[in-house]
Length: 621
Ligand code: ADP
Ligand code: MG
Image 1 (cartoon, rainbow, N blue to C red):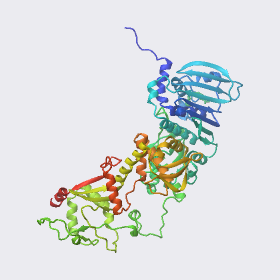
Image 2 (image 1 turned 60 degrees about the horizontal axis):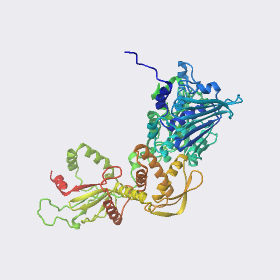
Image 3 (image 1 turned 135 degrees about the horizontal axis):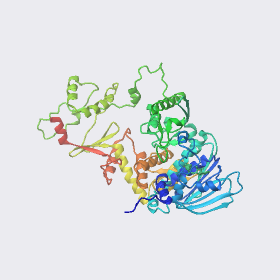
Image 4 (image 1 turned 180 degrees about the vertical axis):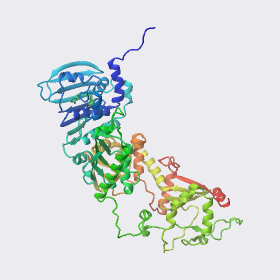
């Protein structure tokens, strides 16, 4: 039998490589704008059509290429950035693999126009699917214009695999923002389908952040700078009160290269300690400079991961530097040695006495479970409100603790602080229990008797379910009730959020938001869904966008489901809200009118049922 192994033709090899380098339009964008940065450009313009599916174009005023180099640039492993193996350990450019142009040209219809500043005339190359269609001299301005049309035109499976335009555009904006943040000294712009989404003049890092994320960031930023023998850190961290529910706006750059590093991210987050509200992520843009011999950037083809040789030290430096900045700018809670001598962590978490209502324990001292009686319902007069701390026989409690399960014990201990607060002088009103009377405990759960026992409703989960179904319905029928605000509010958004909002303008209106575009990256909110507490409609809309983004990345929901869910989440009444009798019965009625009353939007139960038989079992075992 003859030999069967052959070298793959270049076009096939390039297509295989492209699979790694160009996964989606955004990865091509990243490569192209990084090339422009490496070429020393002072201005980089990105033009996108159809979320990059029809056109990706990058125009720079960098060094340009000679006619020979511009042909060479499309060969695989052709690079001007490193020459020998040792150079790998001293990389100062963004690119170095020499794979990007070859890969992009393998999967798109590419036109390159380039001219060096010293040349009179430029070069134009047209190449499709790795095949050179033409190369000729042309007139062009100094620098390079690279356009890639119809990405994956020759790999239909790949093209079909691309996500919706908003999703692909989101990825493009992410990549664009990273490079733009790392290079505030370069002008950047981004046009999408003829509209300018970003216009970022040259300036300082702070100005760049504000241009990208909006004017409100002017007051949100705390500068940070730290110099050590091993690394230098510079940049900005966000004030804790502005942290967001999505992880998105967190940027680490190592030697100007964007990286993702969960470990270092942890260093920053823990430095905020309890300053951060639960489940929220601080903003940061931090630049680490380190001698390239201490890092290995060659670990991943898309190069967002880096290995440090002394990670632990770097972790410690970052953590303490963030802490120090927060402290310097008076953001950490100041320790005041004169005041509050017995301040404890617990005290800080417990509401003030005035706002605190003691939970009450009601019992019927005359009740005898063994008594055979036709009328088991104790008269309300035989209920007594237990005086606080009275009748607590320590011996009995110890007995009890011995028999409860481990986890029950934990719960008990967890709620314990509530019961050990200073005594309340006032007489606590008695509960009047009747068959159809619901009542609330801890401003969190609603307890309602039912025939076979009682149910405990999680008020927030229940309200979320009600709103979620209502909003889904609004989106379907386009008949969301809107309530006009007394004062229209203007909301300025980050350009990327504004783009996102534009993509779902109709849906947001269908939910009941009365909004209109108002100049660059702003909307005016004239009204909000009718069932939403008034006053902060703009804030609600902003939160809606935040939750939407979070759900889109974590849960991969469709647009409508995501919107309904996000709004329900933000508009629902929260645990801690006191409800009157009417509100409770309305909530119960509406919950049971839902299509799926039993499950919360999160998938957890909205209520639990406790049967009389179970109670009996508990009391007799
Ligand atoms: P790499 O960036 O890893 O070197 P690429 O395939 O991205 O590999 O680019 C190949 C070469 O083409 C680069 O090394 C550079 O010399 C040249 N090049 C690419 N884009 C530009 C540009 N916008 N301006 C000038 N030269 C460029
Ligand atoms: Mg490159």
